[in-house]
Image 1 (tube, rainbow, N blue to C red):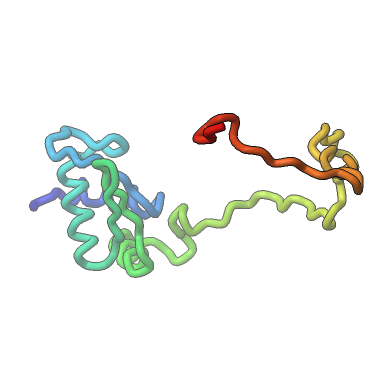
Image 2: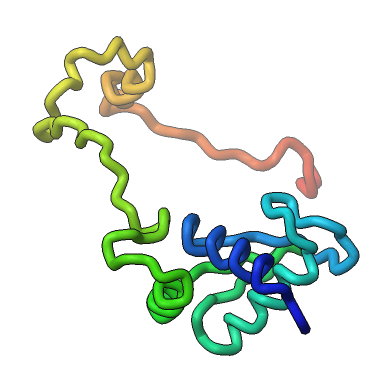
Length: 144
């Protein structure tokens, strides 16, 4: 399919920026939801990149999910003339602080009472002279 260089570049930039791209399986959709490009062109360009091994395709619930492979990152860097320092968002590490680790069992006394969930353990068993009695089942099939 013939796609203009401008549309191809818009699709490649969006794919490289996010590292992933989604498209609904609607070939007649006039515009893609995120890009100002016809949806058919997005699907066909991604199909071409999939056949070259630059993109991995997953299809679910009438949506195409495209993720960039390492070879695809190299190809798009070369095509878009980007330096090595720029990486897709899927490869960026999130800078969130690590939660302080607690020692095993630490902080349990701060919890509230656990209610009566453990009360069955505190009850005493039956005394030594307890003799359970099992009789028939109250007339069910018992002819007396």
